[in-house]
Length: 179
Figure 1 (spheres, rainbow, N blue to C red):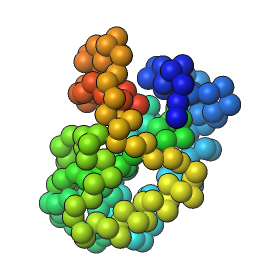
Figure 2: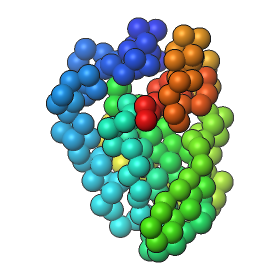
Figure 3: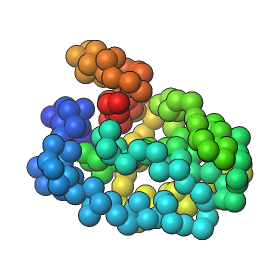
Figure 4: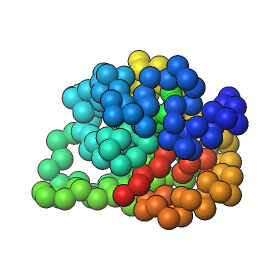
């Protein structure tokens, strides 16, 4: 799937290949020009509501939380979608959210073994739309076995010092935040 060097590049926030257009280390990192249609697909659709929680400013990925439409207040299940900025890969999984008038909260990222496991049947239509958006934008889903692999110890040790990067698996290495 990926070479060892491509993985190291992703874990280090660099393009996985030289021809990848998004580069987190450049001032003009091309996020909007490369992912503009995807962002619109998630944030301006009528099938579900989206909280666009990570735009690449503090992370090496885009993060969308998708939940049923028309909810002024909502405490329930949602689908968290993560899109790598360093490679054409994505993953998603079910999480629980709390949406109030002036706040939005959620726990942690799903685990690698529960990626793609959408148990709440009310989210199945949303999942179908998410898959269409990902396919339309030529993104590949990373499989559970790959996401579950252990990070090299030096990468896992570096992640311990960053907020929101709990874990030692490829899932946490591919999708990192720095705040």
